[in-house]
Image 1 (cartoon, rainbow over the protein chains, first blue to last red):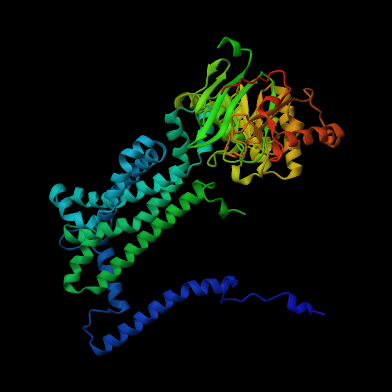
Image 2 (cartoon, helix red, strand yellow; image 1 turned 90 degrees about the horizontal axis):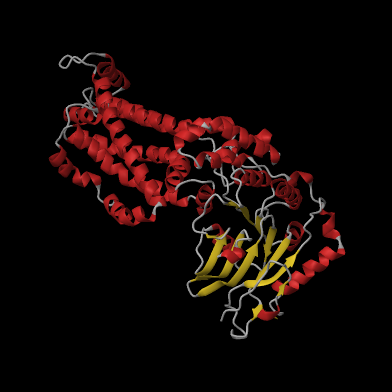
Length: 285
Length: 293
């Protein structure tokens, strides 16, 4: 006789494929790496401060707080603006315009390439070619041809993200089942209608997803171009204060950029979930 | 062209090749308005290919296809389609899916103006397939049978001259399947439709149709070599069925029903038994055959 007790195996809490995390443990586990990072930093900072009170490499929390206060809540004496907000506004404007243009262009290109064999034949190999150019490598060309002003920086973001968005939307449009398109034709859709009234709305959430994933690259290009030639912007500031080894300021700015990027990612994810409930049905039930 | 005008659908010497492989060979077919024409055949015989040719999704390699005497070209609203899958648009609610035809067939601005009437009409069609209560849901929230009912309503609203159905109930469980069979018969009668129905289920084909076509690559042709398995499928049998359809699935249990299914199995599904091309069972009054060498 088999004992009943043995029939029901207890699932492990943490180890292995079958682990079933209790809710509380899940939260603790998620916070643990953050806590470790803070502890390691504070300890290291403390050790260095004890050895040399002038140390700039790992500033204590008090100095970081002072840097935050100075950059985010005090008027800059020379320019008469609050630096962090000024920098944020400039950077977000560049990022916003760049992403907007590349999202629109990439979407229209990808959609038409995915559905119309003529457009595909014309542009697929060209877009593939363009997407293999490392964008940072042509930054000098952009600065020479578009100047070191706003256009050059926005162009870098566009060139850096547009091919990726185009190819992703192209694949999404191509994945629409043939049956779906034929069905639309039997419902009286024109060819234009199939592209812009049937497939267009189906690919929009995919676009938002792609933009979300491209934002990481966009930040990279933004900060790189601001670091090289700019008068303001988050990237500009970081590379400016680097000259004075102001780690406190750099840490404030990096944390702020990370927070902005996190907010953008979360916002776009929520937008898709709320506005397009049909897009990832697995979330339900 | 005048000879085929009494027929809604008319195929003449239609052949379809993919590369070297002949899939359909020498298909002659005439279908009258109001027929419920079912098509069966062994798997891979080209049933669905034939349907796609009539739909315009694919083009015949040779031969001609007419709708009311006019050669068909690309897919258009006079031929409705219900596939086994992918008939619905995942981004639209059930109601929007159903009214989509009304919207797509007019320019965008006009469709906005006529939204109210389109919605009312769509609601009417949804209720006729018993889905009025689910109008606000998305396709992925519905069961397979319900999705197919939406697909039928969505096609019906365009009032197609012929409704093409490609194994529409193939993925449903047996209970749902029988309910759908009764529903499609009900709609067929109510709307006076012409239906071209491809299925791999012999019982379903005999139960639903007023005419059954057996498509098969298992036949002998004098000009073909004996063992060639690469010959294209042809219509090897064409039987008239009960035109006054029974309202009950009980008829499936009768002996006559069973005998007919046996007969069809023999005609088209047995690779060992091959009838000569000149002895096909083309019993339907609309059937004809042209011998072309």
